[in-house]
Length: 99
Length: 135
Image 1 (cartoon, rainbow over the protein chains, first blue to last red):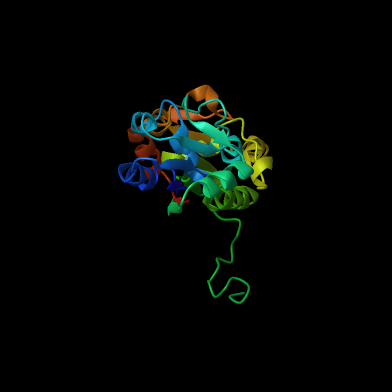
Image 2 (spheres, one colour; image 1 turned 120 degrees about the vertical axis):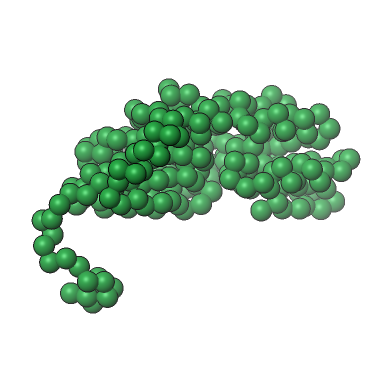
């Protein structure tokens, strides 16, 4: 399953809850304000790095760039564009959005 | 008169006292419309020659981060507008230290000169205002 998160981890607990519900084979895609969850040096970095050990995590690059966060992304998080977003949705059996 | 102001009785004397306005920004840009709307209202206050201060706390600190490029999401990049505020005599921009540090940000990550203050100092600043507008 592909999980998408579109809320900042310091605004809502969507990311935290999402990461807690991941099963084997699940991937996470951070979009919109969710991309703040992809950053180094924040209060949620450790939690995300932990999840990264077992699950691929992606972030939508146009949303990263819009927010000026291009040099702050955690190593290991893969950046995708809109067509990459579509590919991920197609590759996984289903998509769950954490709002 | 009340028709034009949506039924709100306005003071006849518009030359009155200059008030201290504080705009409290707590939302990240782009994900919601709050940040852009705040900036619009700040410019209105500036047009009325009021004493304006801007506070950035929690995710609001992300609004003033430099290096924003929004072409990819097809949304207006309003961060350069913060640099234009100086021209409207709006020079009091405060970033809360705790919020900044929780997000791995430093003073030189901002697009405009800001004063970094503690939560305690921010609380003091809030108390000295006539009007506080929250976004």
